[in-house]
Image (cartoon, rainbow, N blue to C red; front, top):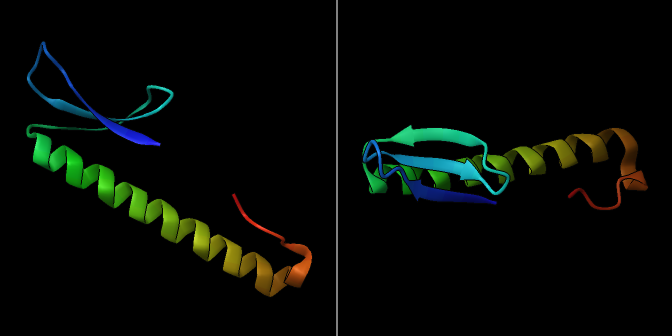
Length: 66
């Protein structure tokens, strides 16, 4: 879902979606890897929260969020 790419021109690292959208730019690969990991964790937490809220409101009408 997210990957880290090295920018040969600048020496920076880009955190991008698989569709090529830039989510962040860092000076080091370690920072880029951490940013990617934290973004994925935040996404998973946001999806879980949204599913919980929808289930609280709609019960078993929510089968499985994706």
